Every structure is written in C-alpha cells, then in structure tokens.
Image (cartoon, helix red, strand yellow):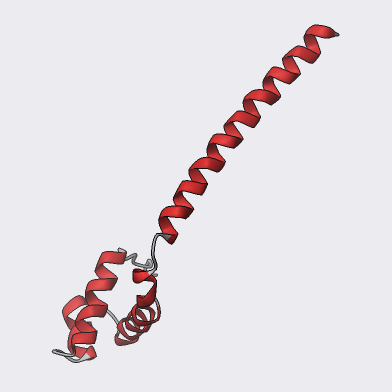
Length: 92
C-alpha cells in the first residue's frame, strides 16, 4: 500500500502558479511534477480562492500578538495558582 505524500505550501503554490500561467497543460504539469491532474486543479482552485487573504492588512500579525499575550497571561495565572496553594498549605 502506498503512503500518502506530503507537499510543502511553497511547492503547492509553485505548481498552482504554473497552472495559472497556462504555458503548459495540466496534464503536462502532472507529468512534470509526478502528480495527478486533479490534485493540480484542486491546488489551483484553493490558490485562487485564498488569494485575497494576501492583501489583508495585519490580521495575522494581530493574531500572533494576541496569542503571545494570552500565553503570558496563562503563565501568570499558573504562577499565582502555585503561590496561592503554597500559602494555603502554610496557613493550615
């Protein structure tokens, strides 16, 4: 039984861009990259449908900053919980 191959997002984008250029047919690209033509068509559709997200301003950056802030807050909560439990035991 064959194992499923995994492709990097850079490779998928490269193939999708070549398919969009239409210099070679999907069948020729499939032979060139040892892929099934349906896979190239799927990557091409995904590329087109997600192309507008490239021009969104700072959404990803804001998400990364909020994730970092959440992580810092969770660390502070954990530290306070440990200190609180320690003080409860010391008073008992």
